[in-house]
Image (tube, rainbow, N blue to C red; front, side, top):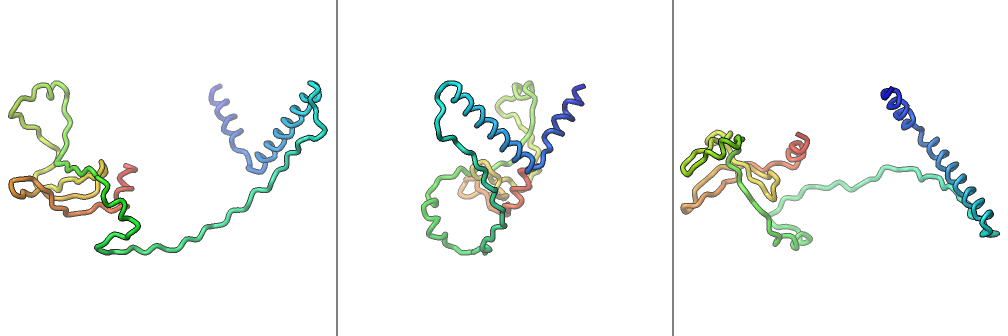
Length: 163
């Protein structure tokens, strides 16, 4: 019985756009008539009645855009100068793992947590939480650093959104 109702609802939803437009026109006319009858009955009828005109919908035309050509240069265009001083959060992820709460509670000072990433595998470089590059860990003046080895293309970033 519920299947029949669903079928009826889906059949009702499949309406030709022209038929839908006619149904709306009829509904608007009925609404206008009901409103004018209500005004006449209450003694508020006016000599001037509102007429609802339907306007034809404009036809759509494909838009043409000028082709953009990528530019490679050391300097940023002057239009972008105002964003050069915006702070960004850059973080590097060396690996991840999953643990049960009972295992997490057993951790003490000196415990070792094994990560899913293999030693020597490139690390992920995130900018504002989005993966932007990969690199390798280096030591510079007794501090850790990352040498960028690969920039993630915009296409690859979009592909990862779907997965």
